[in-house]
Image (cartoon, rainbow, N blue to C red; front, side, top):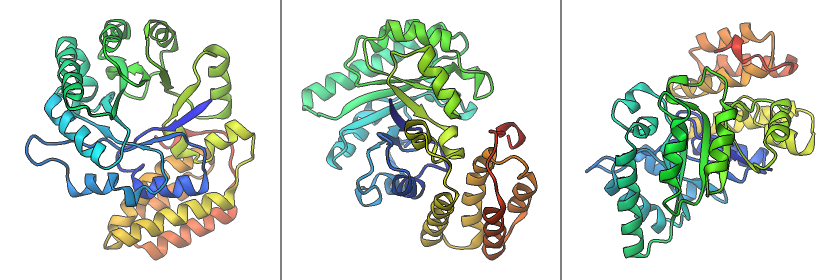
Length: 324
């Protein structure tokens, strides 16, 4: 099985990626949180920092772009090609209301004709200019009805996409309803491209059940599961036990990374609190620590709380419901 690390805005930036690749090697592809090119302004300085080769040394990185404009996608692909990237991913999965209202992310799925025209223009231009960068998509099953994916798949099949990463939910499910694996199977049979599965793989048991249910799939994208448990891929592949010492070093490298690029305790703490909202899923009985971290206003206090927690914490069942 090949494992990918999903993008998550605010968390899986290059600071997180570098630390994860350092302490938990084995991920085949990391995806950037989406880059959103404007019609005139291009990318922000923060987005440019995400894709700089110097910030992603030896990391197998795929930039992800959020747009419904073929022209913006073409421009992005050219820039990324010049930076040495071999693949760019189109975000057709983001379920955020503000994104969907603009017809982007999973909101693009409600207009199959426009989506087809987008691909027509992109691939025609790529052929004319001999741009070799591959285009993959990360998609949901649809907007409301999961069987929308069967219509969408007919569009995807018309174009030389390098891969389909399929999140087995519709937009209205957000992240709350269970992944719809019955429809995923139908989509898998209908697809002529390589398919990567995404959705509800949080534990070794989840992955084992998935392999038994759909053994023909050999690619899985890990999202919230790998943020909550950075060692998840290694534990699945090698059967290793959780290494708390390595988790502490992973945490410390991320914290130091943010301290090096941000000014003020407040900004660093904001990033670390986002991370802890997932890390504590794996540690029942840590609700009190979670509240202390959430209220913390100084880095010195934060580090004392974290050091104490690591000296005492014991992992247990996945308890993400307690921290959602």
